[in-house]
Structures are given as structure tokens and as C-alpha cells.
Image (cartoon, rainbow, N blue to C red; front, side, top):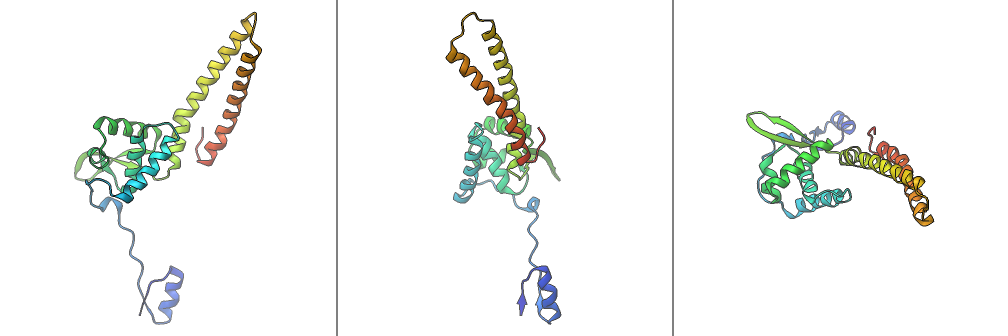
Amino acid sequence: MRVALFPARRKAAAANGHHVHAPAPPPNPAERPLVSRALNASERELVDWFVDFTALMGVPASVGEIYGLLYLSGRPLPFENFVERLGISKGSASQGLKFLRGLGAVRVVSVPSDRREFYEAEISPTRLVAGFLKEKVQPRLKESDERLARLKKSLQEMEEVDPLFADRVHRLHVWSQRARQFLPVVAGLVKIRT
């Protein structure tokens, strides 16, 4: 009788005279064949999840598609694979990969016996969020603070100030301060340092 069991139970089954076999190890992703066909329905659904996820960050759909394809492939992919499988232009693939590399969500890797550049994803989606916070949100908050400081200074120099306008500027300043306080909390949730 063949029994597939967890490691602790495997020992007990072997001690009782049962033939025990270990589950097959997962395949090495780098040994999987490179696929160049269009996405099937299930793959498209997973890729679209990343498209929706990255859309929340205001980035092009191609960025989500590229990351999603790398995520599902489980192996490094060459540049032309993004164009073939996703049906996107070379320009979109190039810009999307550059953007993802800037976030630290994708890296270039070498594949033995192939001179092309291959790309591999950091498989934790939190890496996308972390990179976005660091590369996009922090600089925008800094720019926002500088602009609000200039605006407050110009209000102080004006002889007459519309109270409603002054109130709106004040509210924006308070919101910006709260966003700055909230950012480290979010960064902590995705385990990065801002």
C-alpha cells in the first residue's frame, strides 16, 4: 500500500511497515519550457488582477501585464516574450520593464547558454507597493509640501485674503501632514524603510 503523508506521519507509517513515498518536489522554474503563445483565459485573469492592482497606483496597464506575466511564469523571461504573449508594443514593454526595475519589482538575470537579457519578478506584490511608495508617493508629497509652503508664504504677503481660500490652503496643509504621518505606517506594513 502506498501512502503519501506529511514528514512526521511518514516516519510513523514506515515504522508500521507501510511503503512511503515522498511527494515530488516542485519543478525548478528555470527548467520550465519558455512559452510564446498568447495567454489562456486563466492566465489572462491572473494578469488582469495585476492590471487592476497597478491601476490603483495610476500606472499604465502594460506595467501590470508585464508584472503579472512574470509572476505567473515562475521563470525569467526574455524581452520578446512580453511582446508576443501580451500583445503589447516593444515601446510599452521597454517602458514597463524600466518602470518595474526602478521600483525594484523586476530585475535582470542571466540565463546560462543564452546571451539575451532575461527579467525576473520579485514575487511578493508588496514589492510593487513598496517601490511605488518610495519612488512615486514620497517625492510627490515632498513637492506638495514645497508648493503648499510657497502658497502659505504668498498668502501672508497679500493685503487681502479670501477666508475661504485661506481655509482650503490650511486644510490641504493638514492633509499633507497626515499623509506624511501615514506613509511610514503603510511602509511598515509592506516592510520597507522610507
